[in-house]
Length: 309
Ligand SMILES: Nc1ncnc2c1ncn2[C@@H]1O[C@H](COP(=O)(O)OP(=O)(O)O)[C@@H](O)[C@H]1O
Ligand SMILES: N[C@@H](CCOP(=O)(O)O)C(=O)O
Image (cartoon, rainbow, N blue to C red; front, side, top):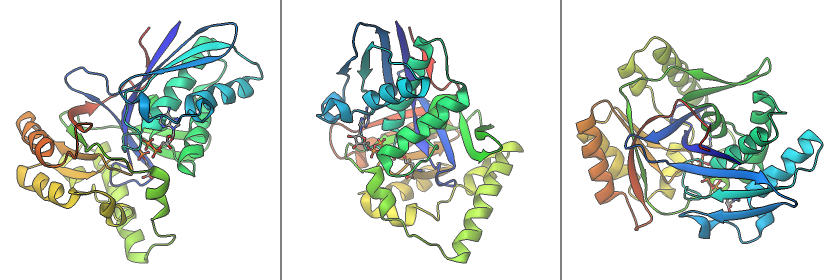
């Protein structure tokens, strides 16, 4: 039996729409991600469990885990009958890369079970394709960090899909999921088809500066440049309380604050435990909309998808 855990991720990290992503895990050691296990069987089956199991599509063939199994078999040219189990711990439509967690855990589990017929790049290509089926277009900024860990920059050149960028060891990422759903496909559809020259220049400067600041380990510069001119101005209307939370983050002393992926999860970066705790308390009291919501203080998850059993 193979059991794979795939962690939550922050798509865009504000500054890199579709090209930057970060995997995160709670500092308290709890697991914020999906698990998929695979074992030998005479015919295919898929069982779903976990806190958010009731939010999965009713038709089992619409579950992305089923589609990953089917696509993996096609890619290796062999029908592999297995019993799969999905532990759906991630809320769907949360901005935490929930579908990516399922995709990555399913494909890594199948690849491990079959003694790794696919290379890392072949697997990542498949992961992007499966994520694209769900959100309407291929974007690797959730699947790449979820699979490879850490902060990942999408290159998609010279046969390289994604490469790691050094993060900041003392950064704490406070993640607040309010408990409501925002569809990634819909949050993509409301973005403009074209941007003004000033916005293109600002975006280029922010992203290039952020990557430079990471490589030269200038945390305050990096945090200052975590500005989103591409998505945040258009998506905040989908996120009740986001403007107030952003203001609170500034008052409390967070270094940066933004939308995780397409939302509604919000993230705030803090460089001190005490500030992160105050931020987490504020978000718990003011940003959560119902009892499905949660707040976690996280660090970058540098390991990415991994075997649990
Ligand atoms: N195993 C799965 N995990 C998450 N979403 C799934 C899964 N299988 C199918 N889906 C569908 O994929 C879509 C995911 O929505 P999306 O807004 O992209 O969520 P997220 O941003 O959290 O990945 C939903 O329509 C959901 O029903
Ligand atoms: N770059 C994508 C990221 C979507 O992340 P998700 O966690 O909301 O699926 C986008 O911003 O559309």
